[in-house]
Length: 87
Picture 1 (cartoon, rainbow, N blue to C red):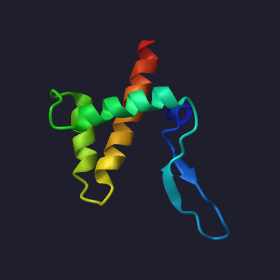
Picture 2 (picture 1 turned 90 degrees about the vertical axis):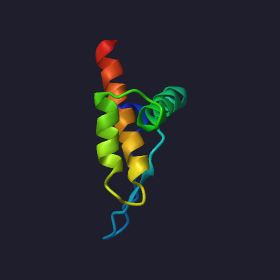
Picture 3 (picture 1 turned 30 degrees about the vertical axis):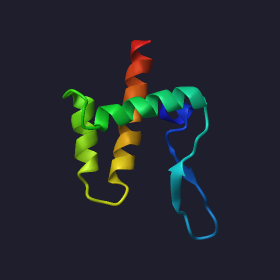
């Protein structure tokens, strides 16, 4: 489901280097925006406590420079899978 919405890292393979890029952005743009904005709310400071929120906070506490961004994308992917199962 994450690949359908474009919530997977892009690739830029050239010779021996294989750097990981940001979210590829393929798929339905409006659905991706809605899921990512929902994930921003879930990971943010005003959302009620839930399993998705705790999952995002665990990833965001990694301490790296992009930890919050990675947490939002991870929560968005889990939310998309959850919505797909409910549908």
